[in-house]
Picture (tube, rainbow, N blue to C red):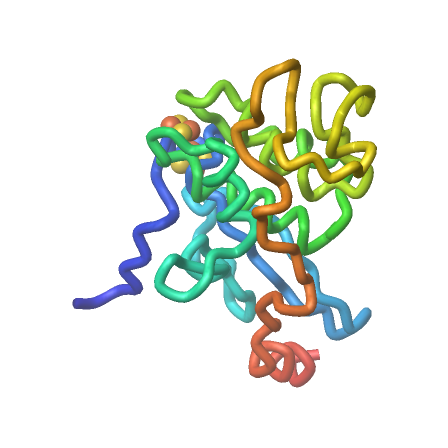
Length: 195
Ligand code: FES
Ligand code: FES
């Protein structure tokens, strides 16, 4: 078979509006010696613009065959995926955000996901899964009052508004930014030579 055959990134609209095709593009700037990561709509990105850039798709950050990335694990365990078609795009928007800002606020997360549409979940469980990446997370709607997780008393049965929670934060893989994919060194050399 020819081509790369990575079917994880989806086609939802072709107009840049749904985010189902979101991937991360990374470029090295030899001037500032820094690497820039951005989330982009693959449906609108001509491949001829990608000379010297690294593209990361949902398959690139983790899989059930090896190990899921926390961004993948959290949206799944928080019930943020129903039909699943928008999920790769959600995952890559959140992944790109964390590559630039490993300690986002809730506002950063909402902004990061603003270009991603979901027809199934109502967004609530996606945001609930991802707000676990926030340092000062309010784990429930009570803004930390009367919450066993927020006050750290280690209750085995976290209660939200009198109901058991749908997932437990303690069961989630920690985010370890030191284990993220490295930028391909050959592309760094290529950029230095061109400079
Ligand atoms: S397919 Fe909808 S934004 Fe690319
Ligand atoms: S889970 Fe179906 S579109 Fe988001």
